[in-house]
Length: 229
Image (cartoon, rainbow, N blue to C red; front, side, top):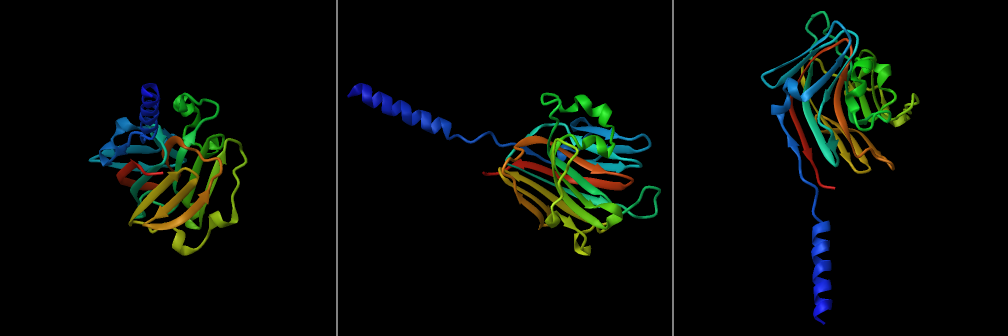
């Protein structure tokens, strides 16, 4: 009888232990400093960090990666202002992003190929990730894709938007929220759900990157946090 009680108690303790949630993570705008990011950019552009603000000036292509690998379920939110005030790279286009990105060729070192990627868009096609190109093609298309690690990046009709309401408003702060919650993947703009998919083979961890080309934008008020399943 005593042995049975001990075994029952041990089983109860194991159950409680196994039900513990994973540690919560939370990053805020204090992480908009150069030391927390990896810049992949073509020659001629610049990315600067000052007073918790990231400013991207780009000519031929740029991806700025948050250098910490993120574990889902997770929410990533930030403000982006695309500047169009007559400057040489001011253009309302390509407010883009990657999230939950991994490199199948280098699963243990995502940044091993960083110099070879060098901000060229085609060099990211072999990654696995979620991608939104918001206001691409000179602010005429907004698209969502799931990259599967091959050059083939399927585009579903429901994820190919051309309406004016789904485009960039220049010189205005726009709040972007990315969600990776198990099989549920979502993209919000200013609190409005733009894209949602149920991914039967979801990417549950990876890197977050801000992507653009021939553009001038400001990124601020970054918040990354774990969310409940």
